[in-house]
Amino acid sequence: LLDGRVLIAGGNNGERDLASTEIFDPARGAFLPAAAMDVARSGHVAFRVPNNNSVLIAGGTLDGQPVANTGLYISWLNAYQPFGQLTVGRSAVAGTAFKDSGAVVIAGGSVRTATSPHVDYAQLPTIWTDKRDYSPGQIVYISGANWTANGQVTISVFNRTDNQARLVPPLVVTASSAGTVAAQFTVLDSDLG
Image (tube, rainbow, N blue to C red):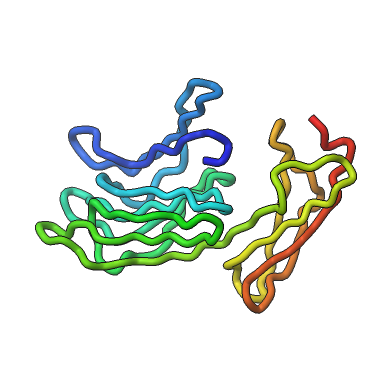
């Protein structure tokens, strides 16, 4: 995850496939419980979506049968939600999350004893700032893409050191007809640290 923690999802304990997830926090040297997946699976893939910080989980098997459904672990909510279906359930897939675009491509894999020629594509909402760090008095420009056209988007900004909301109330913007969003705010002296 963007904050350095690691999501561990599913797998097999030697007796059965698992739906459980946990977070390894290297700063604390501890494993923490996380939201369970809706379907147990092993042999799956997981992709952290750039400029989104959610994790798309796809493919794998449940009791030896290919799994078609996909799910999304939403790190800032510690929640897991169903996301959609692969064209065909399969394990041992390959794929990638494309930098900056919010796109994930999942290809190939195995369907029981055959190789799959299928390719699946997902596009997730993204959000980013114009640079990584700011000084007091500077304007932070926030941009995003792939949101619901003309829908409302709520943007909450957190102070990375204490994880407390910086803006009260959060920024609420309306996405354009193309699904893009834009917002801005000024960094205050109180934001240092």
